[in-house]
Amino acid sequence: MTRYLLDTGLVLRHLRGQRRVVSFLRNLSKSERLSIATVTRLEVHAGMKPDERYATQKLLSRLAVYDLDREIADKAGDLIAASMKSGWVLSVPDAIIAATAISNNLTLVTLNPNDFRNVAGLSTLALDKDLL
Image (tube, rainbow, N blue to C red):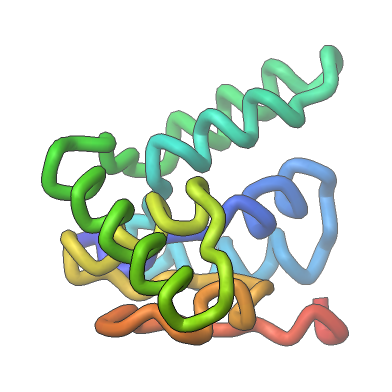
């Protein structure tokens, strides 16, 4: 069963071998299948270095991927509109990630809880950057 959606930063740090992130995600994956939004897959590919292709594909193959569909797109658009009315801006990738988590009843695991601070209905597991 998938219960956690990983924010892009965690996936990138895992790929770069940050030991505490790797250890945390390995422990979390022992009891749950971890997942990402399609936009996270896009962001990981965009930031991938040429010598990281094999390791990236290997890691991504282990993660469930939630595709961007109409429901998620509409929800992401609503989240962006709500953020602008509240005086802060939710980026398009973060809106898609948040909408994916909300639409699939997943907890978003992130190093950047402030990016999602005002997203109604979003469950987050925030990790302290200093500990990682």
